[in-house]
Length: 225
Image (tube, rainbow, N blue to C red):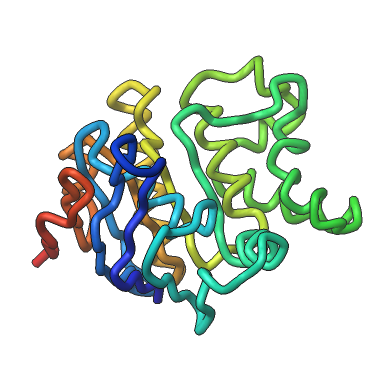
């Protein structure tokens, strides 16, 4: 479980201060598909960055796996992310001249995993996402839907317990977007926690739990019946 207690995030000081998050309290449950929905500027991406250990709150505490993330050093936070968290982004962030295999294996390469081991893990997850025939294709030769599936494979290759997806359907057509949401739901059935950050109501409706964020505050918490 990930728990945020009285989390505040402020950028700048004095009259120039921007209050991105205002005393947020929430729990991300293990094995659940959780959506955070809000308009542009609502604070949802800031919230995702704090949940994922990419940013730290100005005030408050963030707990995950028994750790107080706000007490960790930058190196300890990086180690936490590398062990526990997979990230999926709207813009894919693939290396365009790397192959699918090289892109998916990247998190394991960074961790110093031997080549044979990391390629075996990458091929396994690539196959699971239906991309076996693209394994040696370069990222710049893929369609948008294929690129997003590669980014999902990269997020899963190190077997994280938490997957954070920031507007993962934003650059996709409706058919490919629906396929991405289907994959995210499937990930939850494997015991992983998935957090979807979106402004798309239809995507959010597929989640088990929906947090509505407005002007830096949690406005509502909705649960699938």
